[in-house]
Amino acid sequence: MTQKEFEDRTGLKTTAEEWAAIEKMYMVAGEMNKDEFCVRWRQTGQNPLTKTLAKTAESLNGLLETRNKEIKDMQVKNTELARFLLGKALAYEDPDFRNEAIRLIGEREVIRLTLEEGYPLWEEDRKYLTSILERKQG
Image (cartoon, rainbow, N blue to C red):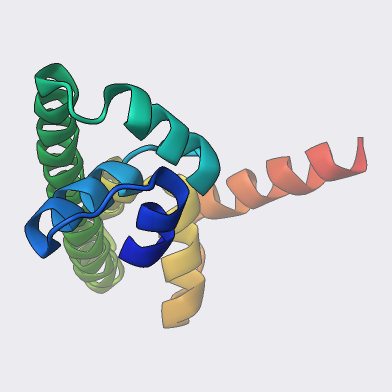
């Protein structure tokens, strides 16, 4: 929603600073459509509690975005570490490296990386894939 749309719907004039705060509140309002938001704004928008809750929601939303980015970064790092461990498992024929890769990213992803890298499948990989194929037929 634009500032003009908001002003037309509410009959209120807003400064750029006020609009910036209102827009943030609108963005965290979830599934609420423009008309409903404007009606609710007319009812409670100037309430100090509403403004405090909006700031809290904005802050929590920022924290959530930060955490989601951290999780994504960690997933990328774990995948790269698992790729390294799979290489070591193959080079040293040591299942402990493979098992650690599974602990990091899960067996499905380990098998996907194994195939992606062109590594030979371990017996455990074959059993896992066979069990999946058998479930699909049943």
